[in-house]
Length: 281
Ligand SMILES: C[S@@+](CC[C@H](N)C(=O)[O-])C[C@H]1O[C@@H](n2cnc3c(N)ncnc32)[C@H](O)[C@@H]1O
Image (cartoon, rainbow, N blue to C red; front, side, top):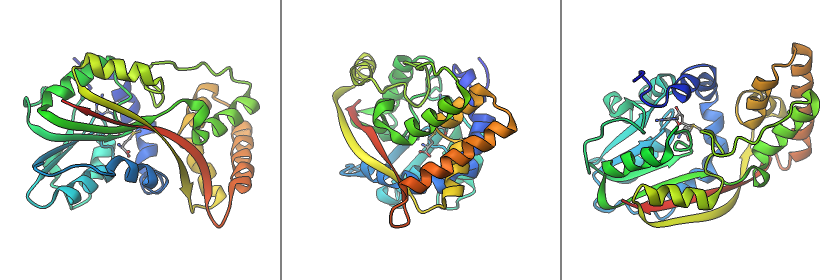
């Protein structure tokens, strides 16, 4: 097995340039995802929870929030495949450095039934074998306790992904191949497929709510355009199209023009639709 367990490809991905982009844009992404974090944590029952797990915790924004909610006596672990992102997570003093663990959630040998709660903000859609990964996560959670995560609904309902993607496709002529159920942001956008994966992993009381929300930023249109060059479906398409510097400038300018159209009361906003998922181990 590689140092990335059974997810070598994604391990490399999140430890190379894309992981670095998430490090560089951590504050900017936390601002954009704040509403979605609120949805993730809404009504979360932490009574009697002493040991929490944040799966695919990235730079640890939700791990810190979970720790705050659970209180001083509780222990919280942030697990992620990316050392780059964990280095940033460990730089925050609120949680002990040793509570951030570099591991593949699919193949890591968890202490059985050791967590009272597991959460994730967009950190569970990148498994080669999702059924096996969720079985493994299930084994780590005490029987009767909750796993709660958010993931993306279909591309068509997510302007933050669709709009930059369409821009890149229009300018480069790239033929966009729907990634289907491949590991990636949209892997669980088919709700019944997601349900079947969680069922196969022996979760019960599976609830998948469709939540319409938005992604907003106070960033300038130029700064927002730079972020879209690095994160999201537009950036993935740019990587695939490998355009010249001239075409890259054209794409960036198109992102600026689109940002200006969206700008209202100092905010650039995109419609977003997510699934808020709750299941019991
Ligand atoms: C879209 S980012 C979300 C990061 C963080 N949860 C947030 O909301 O800022 C996806 C995260 O999942 C992590 N990840 C991907 N595959 C993983 C795996 N097999 N095991 C653990 N973490 C994984 C990535 O390294 C990355 O940090």
